Picture: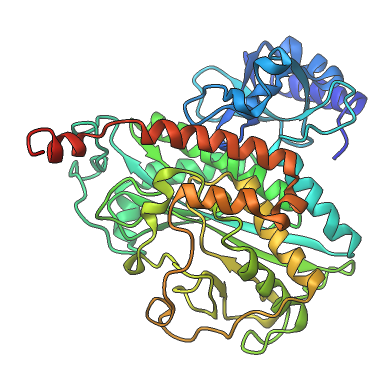
Length: 458
């Protein structure tokens, strides 16, 4: 998408006229981890932001999960902590319903100083480049996310999370029934406020479901025919959920596995492709998928281990994988089969799609989408046939073959010619450097369990 200039200034003027009470504007840009960074400015600066953009350091995309610049990326001191220019993204200027003082937000993306060249390390830019490859085929990805998260108490228990007390009963939940309406009732005001705020921000959230653990919920986003915008929606919805929980004196986590004895939180991605006439090229019989769908599945299976570090980018991500919680452990596919990595949902043949079930809720939506679309495009372009369909329990039929730790996942990603081709080797170098830095620091930390096991025993 081209940067906004004069027309954006007009949009800013219209927004300010519609919201004379406005006191602040949050300028937002998601980093490599999907964490929203940015600046808070006075409304008087908004027109200038639309006309000229705002300067932010390139090292925003060299930050680790702790917010520290990873110098091995070459985006910090090596370039003098130099700035790039961040420009507004069309139709993302909205109010923040959770703020006590009237505040708006505006999503940005980074460009080189010429304001024409997108910055290579911005995950949004990486995804845009892959979407352009589909345009060359006359195809448009149509996508939607399902996001799982936990409500947790603002007060932790000896440094560990715990479910919040119900605003209705005052009790702390010890268990949850999947799809329970009663569990939705316990947190009805919070959940209603999330949907109301999402609609106010034009985020297409259309359903909330109680999941299978205490305080765990899933929110579904509606399909859009813009893969990049679908990721904008997911990123902004996560921010909305976190802030709305604070308003209700609760906290949230999108950590992949916050409780060792409960289900982890996933981020499932639904994808189909439409042609220039708007027809779903995957449409047909799921039991006998057409060429396009079959090749897409083949590409996703072939590249799944290459992309595991993008699906599961954190050390904790791999603790989520467990058969009893419907988390796949092998590169498999099936028809309406939730034990497989790739599920072809049943139902309307015209709405046939791929549900990618591997990623955790801690994944960066832009990089998850980029990896999935790369696999699909690779499969279609090379006519890759998938393995046989899995019928029944995939965990019983297939040995675990997906990478099960971050160290190996980064090695696979760094060696992947396919991912380097689609995401760019320069970008992958930055991503891998950030994550290896985190991993090295983690592995040098002495845990409480080590003291318990070894301090007085060896």
